[in-house]
Amino acid sequence: MSISVEPVSGTVGATVGDVDLSAPLDEGTVADIREAFLEYHVLFFRDQDLSPEAQLRFGRCFGELDTHPFVEGTEAHPEVIEIITEPDDVLNFGGGWHTDVTFLEEPDLGSILYAVDVPAFGGDTLFANQHAAYDALSDTMRGILDGLTARHSAGPQYAKGGYSTLSKSMKTKSSEHAARVVRHPLVRTHPETGRKALYVNRAFTIGIEGMRMDESMALLEFLFEHAVREPFTCRFRWSPGSVAMWDNRSVQHYALYDYRGHRRRMRRITVKGDRPH
Ligand code: SIN
Image (cartoon, rainbow, N blue to C red; front, side, top):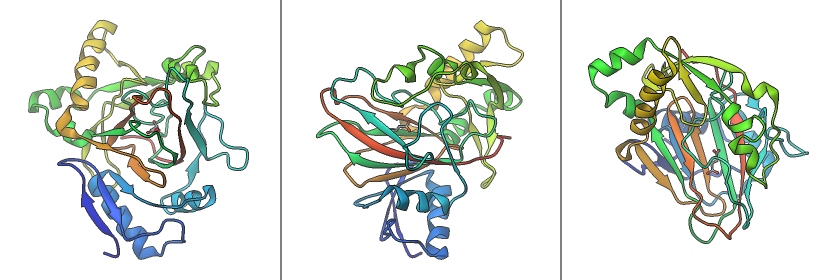
C-alpha cells in the first residue's frame, strides 16, 4: 500500500496518511483508498489544502458527482455545497443522526467533507457503523427485519418549516417534492462487500410498509437508538484542512452543535449511488 491507514475506533473509521489530495492521484493510490474505505467505512485525512476544484477531482475518482436537491450548490460548482454555521445560528445542518439523502430512489454512495473554518472547540462529527449495528441484533430480530421495507421522505427536513430549512446560514430550498415517499429495504446489502447493514435513520425514515403507524414507530424508535449505540461509533475532531469521506451505504453520521457563538464552515460533495437492495 502506498498510503498509511490507522483505525480510530473498534468498529468504524481510519486515518489515512502519506497522501496529498490536492494533486491528481494515480490508480494504485485510488485503489488503496477504495480498499480502506470499504474496510473502515469512514476515512479521515489531515492537513490537506483543497481548492473546490481539487476536492471535485478527488471525488470523481470514486464515481459521478451529485447535486443536492434541496441545498443550493456554489455559483461556480453546483456539486459543492457549503455547510455553514454562523455564531448566532440556533441550528446547524446535519445536527442529528442521519444517512445522506435516503429520500432519493438512488441515494448517494458517499460524501466528502472538507473543513475550511473550524470553531476553537466543539463541532465534532460522529459516525456509526450500520453493519455492526445489524450484526449485534439477535437472529430472531434480524429474521424479522430482513424482509421489511421502510418509507423515507425529505419532508421532515425540507418541506416548508422542515428542520433543515430553519438553519439560517444554509442556502436550502423547501419544496412540495420534499413530501414524496420512496421505499428502501430496511436492511440493505452493500453492493461492493455483500455485507448487510441497517438502513433506517431518524431524519428521513418515516414508516415501515405493511405496519400500522404505532407499530412501525415503536420498531423504528428501537432501531434509531440501537443503530447509534456507542460501540458502533467513532468521533472526529476537525481541524482546518481535515477531510472526512464516508460510505452512506454503511454509516450514519451526526454533526454536533456544541460551539454556539462560533463559526464553522465546511465544503461537501457527494458521489452518486445506486438503488439499495
Ligand atoms: C452533514 O453532511 O451531515 C454535515 C456533517 C458535518 O458538518 O460535520
